[in-house]
Structures are given as C-alpha cells and as structure tokens.
Image 1 (cartoon, one colour):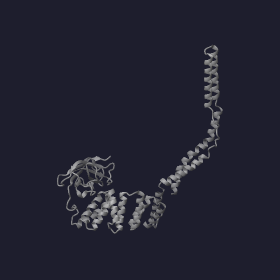
Image 2 (cartoon, one colour):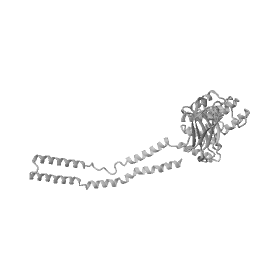
Image 3 (cartoon, one colour):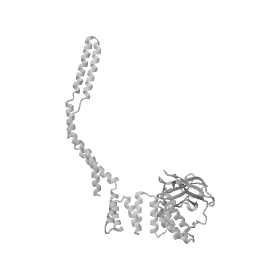
Image 4 (cartoon, one colour):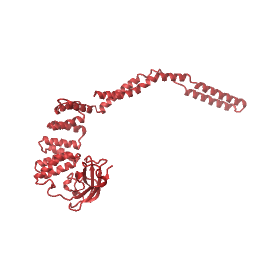
Length: 415
C-alpha cells in the first residue's frame, strides 16, 4: 500500500509542477509588460495622424474646397476618432508580480485533497488491501484458511460495503462447513449487489444443505424467485435434482441435472452432475447409453443432424462446445429445447424433445415450427461471443422423432 501512495504522489508531481511553473515566470512577464507600456508610442502616433488630417482639412477650407459647415462636421469626426483610439489603449496600472501568489499553493493543496478524496471514494484501495492480505497469508509459514478468514473478517468490519470482501468470505465459510456464516456473507453480498439469479440461486443452495437437504418453505421461496428471473439457472436446477434424487424420483432428478448442465458456462462444472445422472440411471436399471424417460412419454420433437462445414474444421479446437437450441419463430418464449456436446462428436444426430426443455412454461409441445440454432463456442459459454461458429435453420416442423433428420450445417462465424 505504501508503494501505491508513492506512485500516487509521483503522478501528482507533474500536475503540481504545471501549477507552480507560472510563478517562476511571473517576474519576467511583469517586467516585459512594464517595458512595453513604457515604450509604447501608440498614443503619440494617433495624435500625429490627427494633426496631419486636421491640417489637410484646414488647407481644403482655405482653398474653398469645403464650406464652413462641412469643415466643422469633418473636424468633429476627427476629434471623435482620436478620443476613441485614445480610450482603447488606456491601461489599468500593472499589479505587482507577487500578487496572487497565495492562490497557487491553495489550488495545489485543493488538487491534492480532491485527488485523494476521489480515489478513496472511487478507487480500488480496499481491493488492493484484500489482495495484499491474501498474499500475506499465502506466504506466511503458518498460513491457513482459518487465518485468512480471520483477516477477512477484520476487513469486513472496516469495509462493510465492499462486495469483494463478502464474495471471498462466502465460499471459505461454505467449504469449511460454517453454513450459517456462509449464509450471512451471501446475504450481505446480495444486499450490496442486488438480487441477481446466480446469487439468489447460491443462497437457495446453501440454505438447502444447511436444512439437511430439505426443501423448506424458505428454500422453496428462494428457488421460485430464482427460476422466475432465470428459468435455466443451473445452481437451483442442481438443488432440485438432488431433492428429487433423495426421494427416489430418479427420472425427475436426471431431467433437472441435464437442464442444469445445459445452462453451465464451464463444461467441466457439470462433472458431478453427470456422475449423479449415471447413478440415477443405474437405479432405474438403465445402461449409460439409454435415454431417461419422463413418465414414459417423450412427446413431439425434432431429429437433427448437425455437421461442420469443411472450411471451418479445426478453427476452434477439439475442446469447443456445441449448443443446439430450438426457439419459437417469433422469439417471444425462452429456449424451447437445448442440448450440448463436444465439437469432436460432429457430425452427429441428436433428438430434441420434452426432456430438453429449459422450463415447464416453454417446450416444443407449444409450437408447430421452430428455428434451430447451432453454435460452437470455444469458451463453452452459453452467451454468444465474437469468433463463435454457427448455423441455423428456419421453419423446422415439430413432429415424430423417427422421421428423417433435419440437416443443420455450421458454416458461419459470429462477428
């Protein structure tokens, strides 16, 4: 932190120098202006010009070129012009070169104070303190999670409005089994950041585990709130899958977990859920290759064959993720069905039906035709990014899944 303030001072020095520099030149500028005014002959030149013009006018009167009335009028104009020219060069007395010197150091102090106050309000001093604290604990011979939590709790008292304090404390409390403290930290984070779906979903998850994996009224309210904001929020769907698994509703658990995996931005994040799906399939007497059936009814769907244009092969690497999404033609509903797989599986046939719905309020059963959109993401993020590959197909009918597959070719780059 000392280095930060030293750097801050170094950055202020040029600004202070620019404020101080005019003082060093004030004496020289004053003397130059005084000499200029002392040697200024503008007034004498204006009088000489007036006299020449008046003499010329008098000569014209003597020759009879102008009458007396015209002479008086012209002379009046000359006198008025002389007065105007003389008035315009009238100068105020020069002030001393030392006048106003106190204003400069005052402004310099104000600049420093304003800069420090602005940085304390808008800067990241608190975050730098957190970083230094974490590095200190990490390099300490007896450093531990408990020591880190203790230091962070001290910062929570000093920086109660810093969201990074609470977002760092929450997972630490959770990982060492201090559920109530984790809930408190997450609630404080929500108060600061707002009720975002991801935060409320995490609160529902920790409340669920603290309640011994029970879907209490409190947990249910948080789940409902999250799904209302984001029907595909993976944390909440994972919680619902665990609750369904615990009461032996394995088909429902598989459905929730699959939907949770489809909404995760990091493909590796769903590994535990995939293992849960395998266990649920075993308890249903299925092989890993079997498709889970919800109520023995799949409903109407679409069989899709997805392929990659030869010109784009190898562009994003074998770790990229392919998303296949079915949407209503008007774009008014959430995604009706979503599935994902690795780009290395292309070309591949997939079936979209009721099991791939993201929400009970939006499924393929509600429409007759859809727009199919296929996107390849290098990051695995569900949000489109520049450089992603994509292809689409409009007006695809929803019907029996045993018909010929609909061809969708990934042939464009998302800009």
